[in-house]
Amino acid sequence: MFSTTTGRLRAVKPALQAEGQNRKEVNGLAPKRIVLRFGKDISDKPIIYYLVKDYDLVINILKANVNPNKEGTLVLELSGENYDKGIEFLISQGVTVQPLAEEVFRNEERCTSCGACTGICPTGALHLERPSMEVKFDSDHCIVCQICVKVCPLKAMEVRF
Amino acid sequence: MAIERTYAEINEKIKSGKAVVLTAEEVLSLVEEKGVSGAARQVDVVTTGTFSAMCSSGVFLNFGHPKPRIRMQKVWLNGIPAYSGIAAVDAYLGATELPEDDPCNSNYPGEFRYGGGHVIHDLVARKPIKLEAVSYGTDCYPRRELETCITLDDINEATLFNPRNAYQNYNCAVNLSDRTIYTYLGMLKPGLGNAHYCSAGQLSPLLNDPYFLTIGIGTRIFLGGGTGYVAWSGTQHFPGIQEDGQGNSYGPAGGTLSLIGDLKQMKPNWLVGASILGYGATLMVGIGIPIPILNEEVMRCVSVSDSDLYAPVVDYSEAYGQRIPGNLGYVSYAQLKSGKISVNGREVPTAPLSSYPKAREIAGILKQWIEKGEFCLTEPVKLLPSCKDGITARTLEIKGT
Ligand code: SF4
Ligand code: SF4
Image (cartoon, rainbow over all chains, first blue to last red):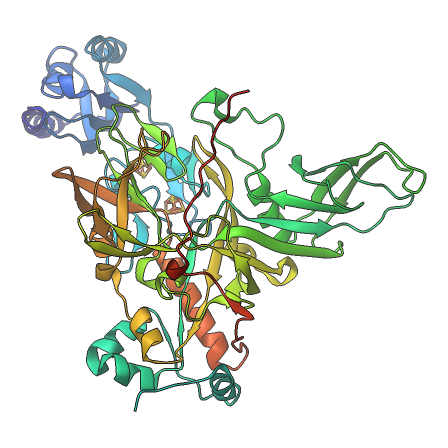
């Protein structure tokens, strides 16, 4: 299960930090923010573990939405000398990799709390507050999949680069 | 003695600032506490509200005559065609109209970024609108081309006229197929991935007057942030009571209203252009209708809550498009609002497409207008057909040649 992988990673990360490396600049390379999307079929492979072990990459998980047997998303900060090779490895495993150059935010004035986005947001970042039925946006849970940007009838969800 | 009130008596109380007005949400706790007859004695008016996409909306415009005059044959507003097969400088702009060069669904799912509904919103927001027109030229209307800029204040009339609004009830849409579909009820994920519903439920105007006891031709209403009127029954007005074929009934559905009002006094936050992914452009319309508590029967009607009102669950991947009768069962608005329903024995997450917070806000604004004495009720010139009239839908037969 993928959750074991993140569990393993949690164990790896403090060790790396304990080595006293500057996470922001491993080997002089600035970390890159990327979004990984996993299909159901690969969500049980310990991919992140291999990134650390075989490619010696430094990873900081910014957001994670992984469930056994479901599609999953991870937002990572990734750095290291073998960055490009690590990305090649991810792609070879069937993971979709996108740069996270953007952030999604809500134009509060435009949003009418219609609710159309709440059924399709994969993480619940956009959700209904009950019983008021107001639509709330919790950007901490947003994985920038941008589905809401397309679906919102009032174009209230915007991408900021 | 059972209470009876006339429109005139209610209006007297409104004018003297003494009318007791509650929203259709607020009245529920009063009925719970005092019962229907107790609540009927106390309350004069109950206000309702709804805010959602209503495709059958549009505006009649008269631009005024240029020099030399033109008999407009084709008209575009910000590039969106308006119907001008009426008098010289009149046109009707429909909410779902699109530019002729919109890629529509050839770039599936189409985005429909700007359409008639957006122009109506920009007009109400007092933005300048580009007006283009062409004509064949006549002896009395010599001009053949025109390009200029207008604002809502520059033109003679702008009459919002919506042939079908305020649907009494609506389907809850699901997708039984194995691919994502894009419908007027939003993006539906495959395999019962989600369910979308579209009604204000207990705040919805026609669910609070299920038998059309008070709403009729000439009823004054909140329309797009200003005042408007019920012009007629809406197109496809087929009021009825939902039944499941086993003798169980699931409350009212099928009524619609045709609404009219002066666009110049409406507000941009209550008439909002919308783009429905893979479906088209439309207009979100805010509507609020006051219900005079003429007697206990009317009070009983407005005291329905979300747990008394039901929507049919319909598959939009096939059954809807192919017009296959029947549905996947009925769910209450209380269940729909809870965030989960059960369909074919599976738990399905739900989401609304009609803004309940905005519906509540509209019912509240209308309540204030009435309390302040600014908004009196009108007695309908004629009531609308109800479920007793047994109007049923005709279908369109495709006849061979
Ligand atoms: S779909 Fe858009 S307008 Fe509707 S609640 Fe979501 S962000 Fe707001
Ligand atoms: S981009 Fe939109 S749909 Fe995707 S996670 Fe963020 S809020 Fe949800």
